[in-house]
Length: 117
Image (cartoon, rainbow, N blue to C red; front, side, top):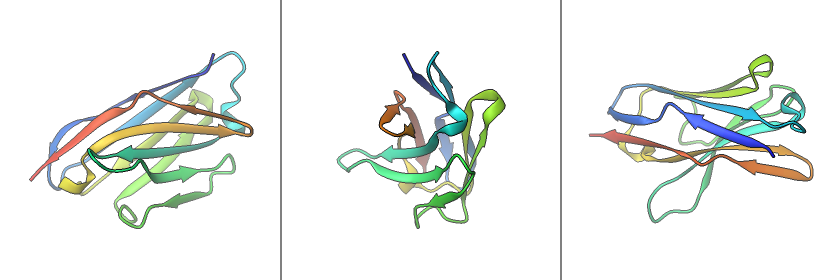
């Protein structure tokens, strides 16, 4: 069984920073061959892609977070990170870790990020 466990969420004020972590585990899970991503879902809205990092470390970001968020991975630790700077109230959401290794896809349970104005 594959598990993705997020951590690092919390309550911060506008302009502050947070770093989310997602640790992957599982006997059959090949982290280094998986594309990893962070999604978020705000109340009443659809889940949206925030950032993705491929197995080759190519990254892409939602326009709303470009220049503020950075996704990275540490294959030795089976961990993907999301560094979030200059946080805004509109970044408030539950953030989910996602992995893809065709045809498999896994999700974490989510971590809440709340940005107060």
